[in-house]
Picture: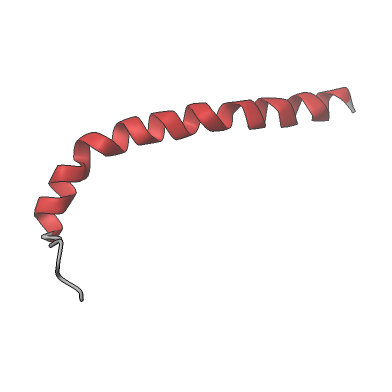
Length: 45
């Protein structure tokens, strides 16, 4: 039972780390994505 609780704790504790790393990897490529897919600010009414 203790091992299951430890696994849950580790999983919950790793969520902020994974989100931070994902955000850090996504932000630098956003301008490239915007240029490739030509998103316009007022494309849709």
